Structures are given as structure tokens and as C-alpha cells.
Length: 195
Image (tube, rainbow, N blue to C red; front, side):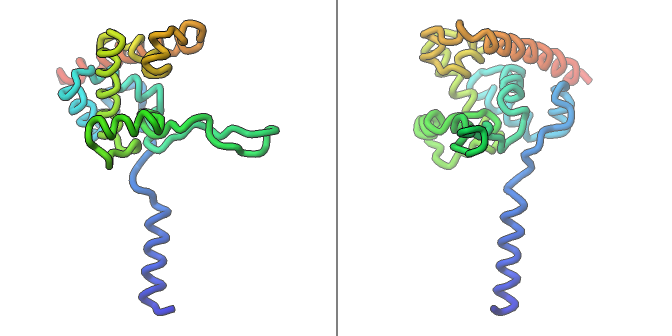
């Protein structure tokens, strides 16, 4: 093999090991101002989705925190048969928004963005804005009602309408935590914008 081909193969291998981006979480997930300072492109993505869909930035930030802790390439854990044999993942959720394969494809078709990626914060926030406005249309849950928007996000709009969440005490608790985090993020963002 020529030196050129060996060097090219090494570059391709090293490039594939490096990944396509920094998918780690920001350092301080309890401070919206810190997230915005550390990852300004995240904050611009949230603002773009807010302008386009009207979904409040703190609501989306709280939902991304709950779904992925701001880790772009996160997936649900594997399930195991007999406790040791991996048989697949719990769901097809992926990325910042933890969008499922089918819902993501519906989004791509609906908005005409076939190249949108779940591990891209701009695409993920656009997806969330799209999904939440569809929730308003189909369920009547306002965009600023973080708790119920999260319940519809987690259980799906039809599941929300059927009330599947009512028998899930853990989900009701988490939805309240998402709502509290949105309130906290909102207060923080108001204070850091004044500085």
C-alpha cells in the first residue's frame, strides 16, 4: 500500500473516531445564563424556534434538560434478555429532543427538511417547536403550559388525550419538575438579560 493511501486511510479512521461534534452537556445545567454563555449556539437555536413557533425558550430548555440533559447523541439504554443478552434499545429515541424515528420522519416530511438531524441542536429545537404547536392544534394545551405540554410530549398527543399519563404518578411528578425548571430558567434568563 502506498504511503498516500496509508495516510488517507489513517485520516479517515481518525476522523471517524472524533465524531461530528461536541455532544457533551454544558457544565452547569441548573443555570440557564451559564448554558447560554457556554453554548451560545444552543441559545440561538432556542430563540430561533421561539420566533418561528412561539414556544417559550425556558419551556424548551427545561424539556431538553429532562429528555437529554443537553447531550446531543444520547440514546435510551439497551434492554437485555436473561439479564445479559442485549436485544435492542428501549425505544428509537435519539438526540437532544429524544424524538422517536416515526415522529422525526413525520416532522421531516411536514416541514420539508429531509436532512434534519436529531443530534443537531437547531434541528432538535425546531422539531420541539413544531411538535408543541401541533399539540396546541390537536389538544388545545397552550404553549406556555409547560407541564401539560411535557405530558403530551412524553405520551404523545393521542396518549395525552386518552389520559394515559393519569396512571403514571412518576410521569406527573416529572412533568411538574419540568414546569418548575422552566420557571427557574425563565427567572434566570430575565436576570442575565438585564446585566
